[in-house]
Length: 492
Figure 1 (tube, helix red, strand yellow):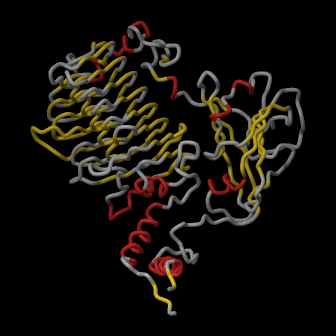
Figure 2 (figure 1 turned 90 degrees about the vertical axis):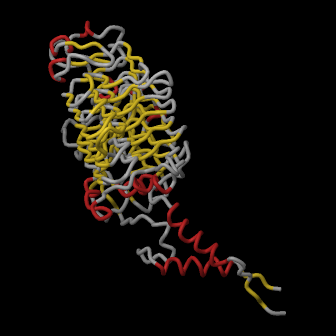
Figure 3 (figure 1 turned 30 degrees about the vertical axis):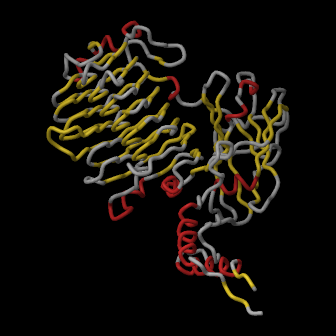
C-alpha cells in the first residue's frame, strides 16, 4: 500500500483560503456579532471594516486618522463599501470621534468613510472631526450613498469636495452625499463646508428622496454649487419620499438654490424647519421658513420642537443644539479599588475590578449597566457596594487606598484579557489611561478615567501571521499551505 496526496483543486483552494483568510482576520477583539462586536481602537482597524461588511463594530476610543493622508499613494482611506458590495453591518461609535480622515479620489463615486450603505446598515453615535474628503459624485464625510440605512446621532466637520461639474446631479453633502431608498438621518448635524461644480449640493445631504427622511438635524457649513444648492439639502424629492422635519441651517449658500432646501423635484415636503436669512444670504428656499439671526436664537421660533429631550438652546445667545451631543457628565472611577498604583498584568487570566464611585451628588444606581464600556469592553459582572473614596486631586493618574466613604459604588468586573487585547501593544512599565463610558437611565452620557501601570509585555497576534515571525508575507502562505496539505493527505 502506498500513500498518495489527494490534490484535486488543492492549489486553487489554498489560494482562496490563504488570501481570504488574511483578509477576513480582524486584528482587534470581538467576534463581529451583536453580543460581541469587533472593537475598533486604531485607524488600521477602521479600514478593516472593508473586509467584513456585514459585521457589528464599535469604537473602543477616539481614533486619530491623520495618517490616512499618506495612504495609498496620496488617495488616503479606502471607503468602506461600494456599488458592488455595500456595507450592511453596524457601527456604534459610542460617542467617540474620528479625527483627520483623509480621502482624495477625484475620479471615484461613492466617497466617504462609508462609500455605500445598503438596507439593514446602521451607523450611530460617531463624530468625524476635520475630515478632508474629495470625490467625483455621491460624496460625504460619513456616507457617500445611503440605500435604506439608518444614520443617527452623528456629526461632521471639515471640507467636502465633489469634482463633477456642469448640469448633472453630483449629490454632495456635509454628512451624506445621497440619502435614498427609505433611508433615515436622525438627530445629526454637520458644520463641514461643501463645494461642488454640479447639482444637488447640501450642507447635510446633497440628495434626500425615495422614501427617505431627515428629522431633528441641522447644518452650519457654507455650501457652494452650480444648481440645486441648499443650506441643509440640495434636492428634496417627492412623491417617492423626501421628508424634512424639525431642521435648520445657517451656512452661506452660493449657487442656484435656496436657504434651506435647494430644489424640490415634484415637491418634497418640509415641516417645521427654518434657515437664517442673514447668514445664508438667501431670502427664499424650496422649503422651510426664513428667519433673522436674532429670531433663530429664540426658542419660540421653533414651533413643535422638543426642547426637553431632543433640543436645547441658550436664549438670545445660541442656535438650537442637540442634547445627545452635550458633553458627558464626568464621573470618578477607581481601577482596582484599594490598590495604589494600579498594576495591570497582561498575562493574567482573571478579572480586572473597577468601581464607579458614588457621592452625595451622584447616585450610581441611575447608570444603565448594559451601556458600560471600559476601553470598549463590556463588564461580565456588576454589583453595588461601598468600596472606595474619590481622590480629591484632579490628576486622573492620582490614586488612593482609602476605603468606603458612606456612599454606594457600582462595582464591575472585566475580563483582563479582553482589556489587554483592546489596548493593543504595550511594554512593561507603560502608564495608560483607560476610559469608561456609559449612559444613565435618562440617556445622559457619563465618562470617567483612571490609570494603570503595565506589568509584562504584550503584542497583539496578527491572525494572518501563520508562522509567527511578526511579518505577513509569502512565508506565511507557505506555512499555511504546508499545514493544510498535511491535514489533507489520505492514505489508501
